[in-house]
Image 1 (spheres, rainbow, N blue to C red):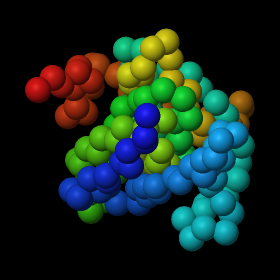
Image 2 (cartoon, helix red, strand yellow):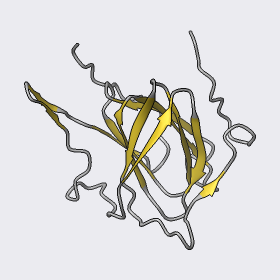
Image 3 (tube, rainbow, N blue to C red):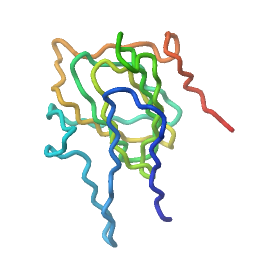
Length: 163
């Protein structure tokens, strides 16, 4: 089955969010795909790399960081990544962005500090997400602030949108 390139939305993006189309190099052995390079203009630094899994139908949301920039890539399965700009006074305050990341939509989404974000697993049994934040996780003083995924003031409904 031939992979179809993801078409980036033309609507306005939240200020500071970077979306990069990834380019798998495929041959009969498999593929190789660069995700993040330190010589790219949007590279913010390296803190650590981690892998997270989300089961089908599960929503992991909402949270934000005061200082940390996240770089999300879904390397297996499919997720819906949603961003909400809750930064007071930002030019895109109140804006919601929705992205689909996965094997057939190989993109990297860079999420700036202060932007609420979360994701929902859309593939069985799970999807795998690699995050390359620019800060180390601090066990003593985590730079992570959480908001309930469903009981909140965020103008977003996580339910499936049939049509």
